[in-house]
Picture 1 (cartoon, rainbow, N blue to C red):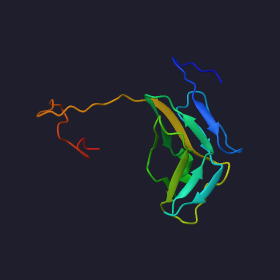
Picture 2: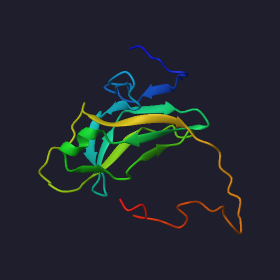
Picture 3: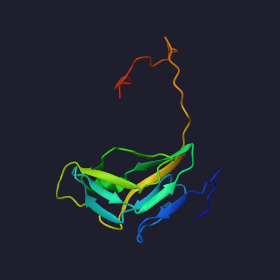
Amino acid sequence: MAHLSLSSMRIRIKKLHPNAVVPSYAKDGDAGMDLRAVSVENDVHGNIVCRTGLSMEIPYGYMGLLFPRSSVSKTSLALRNAVGVIDSGYRGEIMLKFGRTLNPKSPLYKQGDKVGQVIIIPHPYVEFVEAEELTNTERGFGGFGSTGE
């Protein structure tokens, strides 16, 4: 696959299970790399846990974001934490936890299925500075629905 990007990075990944599949891009230009399940099970909280059988070494200053794939719409599943965050210090197994939303009879994921995607991005170190006033903007205090859409 040809890559016309300005930068690339290598991330160390460890297979914790013999059937684990190293994440990969489905198409050139994709942002997310597909994650496959090595097992699908229920936890004590009623979540459907898709284990990837993988752990990774994300560099300091970066994080991994776990998203559901668009094909999740063919199921009644929703990623429990909406977007998962993998911190650079985490070395445990990458897992995605889903909950049922509507039809309890709709298909579930099974072993070998693509169950999510991971995107690795940089993040800044943030230090909050308390202030008495904030700068004015056009939007100001307008919150939910304030743009009329």
